[in-house]
Image (cartoon, rainbow over all chains, first blue to last red; front, side):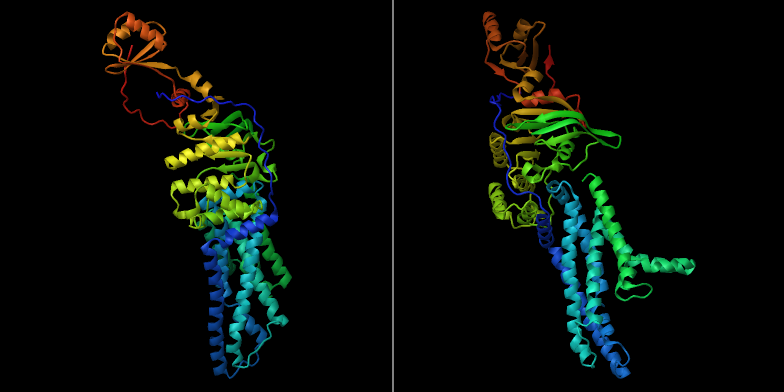
Length: 280
Length: 310
């Protein structure tokens, strides 16, 4: 028991406070998501790694090719533009793994830290927050991807040029495949956001995405040795379709692009459905 | 204003919130009390749409929360200290939150100053103490200058100065005509802060009244008497509706009689008294009494110094 007494309250009706000021907007959400992206150190690390891997591996490849030309006495009979594209995009498969991890973490990090509660109370309809995150990561990853492959092209130019292997960056055979690579890189990041939203855990999300990117094509290819018709679905694997999009083999570029889009849409669609329905 | 109607939440077979009805009025600080697991946090999460009600509905300022065009200006919420990415600085966290509603950066600086976070605002939240995390949570809740504030355990981990600051802040916000819903386990603090109390127990509303009414209805006022002649006084006062408890060797706690009655009778019987004090019941007493049968997670009975009841 305490001797404390409670002061009596007037508790009369006071005028209710009326809130004023700006409200939710999609531009606001885009701004918010880019603040979120660029206020984490991991973003700088991962994007830098993509660029470094891209340029570094391109230099190595260019030198390796050049020594090959020397012994073979020049690069006769090889399409120069194709060779440049191969060199410029050689580091991107590593970049793909890196942005896949970044994509998963951009949402799973919100779940593991509890940030998601802040995000979803600010955006109670939820989906606009997901779309804003998708747009922002897509945009920046595309720019970083393009910077990487164009940079790789440029650092490879003097090395390959020493053997009189030259190509015009803005020639159709060069710039279009480079753009395609940057686009696929950005789509991987976005695909990974979907997986991260579905799984809601960093470890599980990264394992799932890397499984789909790295393991699935190999596993399906192995199965095709046992069951013949399985070989037909190999081109429909996410990363296989991604590379067919740029260098068509079993299907047209646009068909491969559609296959990639289906993967992305299924991932994001499922993510949106679950995000809307589940308790945060 | 927050209005809950038959608000219900099941988690599997467990009912966390069981068809509760209540209204939280603007212009007052409403305390939200209840034992652990009573459903307070779940209710708060349903108010801001983080959890979907299994049945029933809850409206904030006249609408379901998600229908508002500027949710952060309607409701500021502190759910728990861990709603922030640990790799981000406090400043950037608030900036990202503010950007969703195009709230200017000047307001971010305002809430940082208001919550006393200036010195750590640029540091990563991962290194924050519990108290700093709470201050950041309160800063985020205030960001939109909202009409309704929902604060779950805001004083948890705060230093005494911080506790006092939260009390003044919430009282001031209510005085401005805002709705303030506050949960806490610190009853003495709640008694000083709140005007109105809603008590939950096992997912149901077990009390919804002003602080004074809660205390009056649930706990009795008692009188403390210190005398060397406890036995004589106890037998003198013993009657049907009087309870006498022997607190210490020379102290009795008596309910059912007023200070005057006890003093007069003791004087008539020539029993000397060394102390005679009216003890008004506290909110804590009232709360304990209200919730004694509603506790979800009961601690093992520690041996209490049971007085000799007569």
